[in-house]
Image (cartoon, helix red, strand yellow):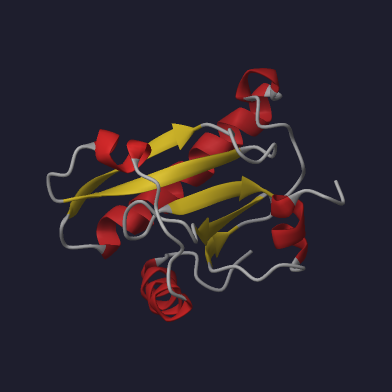
Length: 141
């Protein structure tokens, strides 16, 4: 879709901070993070954000891609023991998963209810390098 923000990111028309990708999905740092390292796993092909209408194969592949990226996030931060997954699609009608690295003991509800401000590009670039260097798939896809 020509007016879809995520389709423009996938095409490279809008800059982003990718940390992982394969032939079907790309994981980028969220520029409005509620927590450090919040990441979006986006399908490269446009599908509606209504996950209940996705083909089963796409939902399965999104889950597997999200798991791989969650493992990168969890292993990259010393204070993160798990990363939470949320499928939502309230703002952008393009299927994506949000991954929230759970830093310390902060409850997930804190992240979901906050109105985060835009992250600094220098911070995102540094974080992008850290996470890409932790990825076992670096340089692929």
